[in-house]
Length: 319
Image 1 (cartoon, one colour):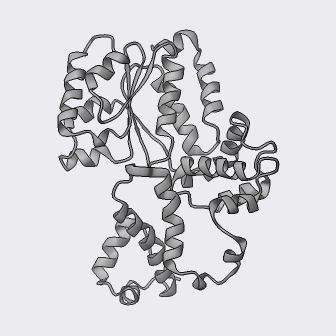
Image 2 (image 1 turned 30 degrees about the horizontal axis):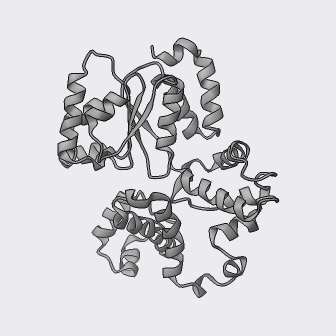
Image 3 (image 1 turned 90 degrees about the vertical axis):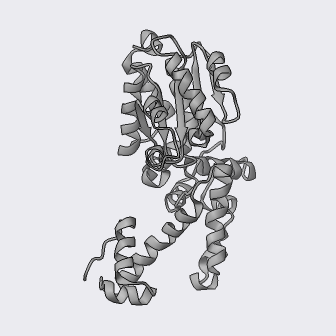
């Protein structure tokens, strides 16, 4: 059993996890439940999820509940693994975006794991926005290192899959960070629920900070949030066709890139999929599910359309 549960009961940890990871979606409740199991072990934790999902936040939360009296050492891909491991002794070593490690650095980290077998060492927490199992299959990540770090595996859900938690997240930040004296108004929450959130929790938090600076004394209602988001009611009231597609795409990409910075991976493939999925669904609706006609409309071979539909999880529903 880890140091955390020597001083905190499982019930106390459960309460603290709920306070620091608010929300009642099935996705976030499953994460909290699994983190409780993680706190009963000293084994490495692998956090996977899209950029902006809160992997670094969860890493610090694990440390705070598990080894609060030791140091929390955040290692970058440029740091020396041996030096960072020594600095994190009796604490936690966090390595963000481990997939960015060079092959040499991966081998160095693996040697440290081998040398530390059976000895006291820091709690190792690693994070990745990329699918490490896929990288191992492509021989782009060391297979043995993956086995070493993939003992306790937590996948953090994107915000679009846990939108019902948005109100609770806003309340938490408004309270803890004094973002706005009256919090987020109901109209503001309803508007937030309609957004896609490509930058996930980080994008939402950045938006609230920006809106709070612009409206220090009032409710953060839908108008205030739209303004902070860069939208205007006038633009929204116009015809969708009056707005060039490049403008719409730019509005999507700008906050995405702001939230993710240099950690964006496979951006072209992701954007293509984001466009293809609704496009295929709309065309299939227009053709009453007829894939041959849909392929003709799209200028694709029918087999190519079927292959892309399977990949994207798009189903043709005949009316």
